Length: 181
Image (cartoon, rainbow, N blue to C red; front, side, top):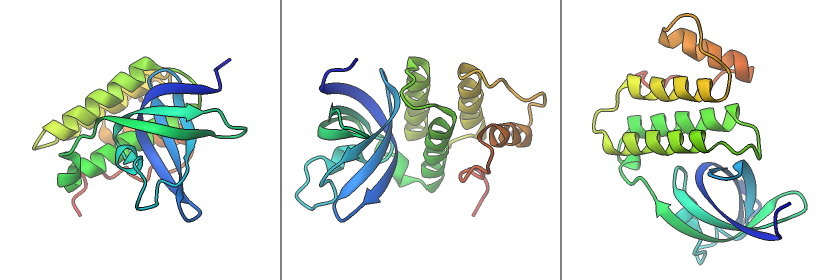
């Protein structure tokens, strides 16, 4: 059983606006796995928390237990991967990796390997000027293996995508990461 307040490190996977000033966050944390929490008032211009809860940021979160959702009380940004936002292909790749982690992991299932792999791939996407398909494919393969989903029989990119979509039972929104616009 968790105490009423707790601290955890996580990577912001998804955000959804709620009401006029709040935001629902999906975060993959080092010690609690995927969690959803409510960030109250973060869309107000005076909010101090908003900068550290942008997508893909690695952040220390201070949370208070709530009835249905935990509530974000304080944040400290650890790493923001500033170069990801400078290149469209890097943003697409980061969105794709975040979508995979969000869809393939269950809530509150700690998995430090997945956390480390996600951190590593975001760092690679941030550092590399020319992102390769192989770097994202390697992350997909590691994630599937770590989570026990296995790999498709064929090593092709298309069969990997089909395998993932058969697991999540829908099309990936970010499947065409390397398709030119």
